[in-house]
Image 1 (cartoon, one colour):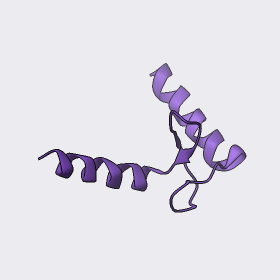
Image 2: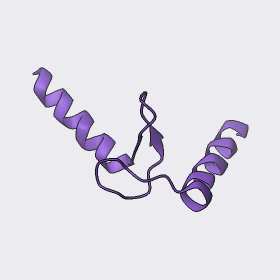
Image 3: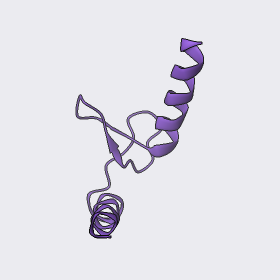
Image 4: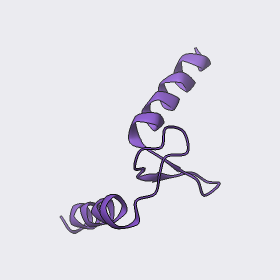
Length: 56
């Protein structure tokens, strides 16, 4: 329960206070890449889908 609350607060902070932008589409991002850039959930899903299709 505490971890769910912590994630909610972190997501709220990112979206409403920090507001990092996706390096691909420019929307508000919630995921940080290893190189320090940010990416939104939609772009991450698309990249994941493309990677899975590429491996087949």
